[in-house]
Length: 134
Image 1 (cartoon, helix red, strand yellow):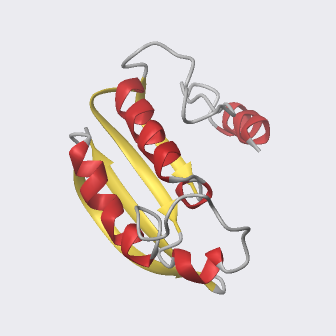
Image 2 (spheres, helix red, strand yellow):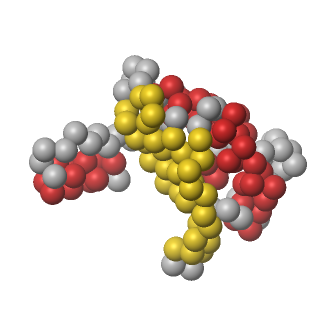
């Protein structure tokens, strides 16, 4: 998906300095303050609490001052979680339905200012769009 997006960006916007690459968001192998923006699409719901915290720390680290980040996520984890194998961690932690509501607070703990937080419907499932700036 990243390679396809990169090819499309290069073809449609040849002068753009956009870079799309698939990486492990918990450990991004680039120097600090490398990016103006980071976009995460439906990633956080796949991670446990520790992975979410590692990912937020890495996104904060690789963003330049005043850099922005967008997260697209499902707001109702409990509905989706029923179809997933059980996790070792407690659902009372960061991940339950209440945990989805905790994400903006956790993002603020990483010195992000949440500029936009809205639940939307994309197709047949609800999503959440969260935009924050460093």
